Image (cartoon, rainbow, N blue to C red):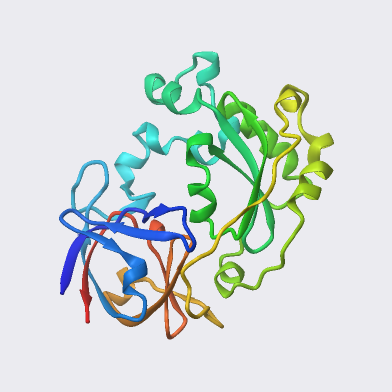
Length: 264
């Protein structure tokens, strides 16, 4: 059987374990059902997620021209403290920015390779945690806009990490942490503007991933360089496909690539 389509991040369903779905133009693949199967991936071409043209992908699935033009790739996406829609100030498209920025946001702690702080829209919980490969997470603050979440994250980054070590996460080289204690410890460092939104009573969310075998020395697959790869799928964690030879493939980091999948 073979399938072909442009990559976008895998869709997920919060279950035990997490269910993963790869959505292609004409197909819908449950990746959990492919564990133990031999999969061949072949690079076909680029397809920018905005213009649809066969142009090299720059970042986030977009060609360079679109990346620096569309609101979906504004600086405030990666740096929420730069959000300005609450002030009525436009970055690239005020209508779009109001739609995304002026909705409830969560500042959270997630433990994937270590305890880290992050920001996501409330509607993206627990999807954001799944995408990061976190095995446990907890909300700290729920604020009405992205800006308040951003300045809270910046303040807390002085006391807790804001990055995930992807190799450590994939090796499952992790320790359980008491995130309630972490939350209480960080409370005093929340900016005054966000103190009233502190979540004082909640518990950790635990996540289980469909992995049969964790890689010992994960090596990232570069489809542009290799052009094709064949391996047996043994797990999915975060947005990574894990193969039996320790090769890992980050689906989200390769958005905008058209890939042909052959499943034996």
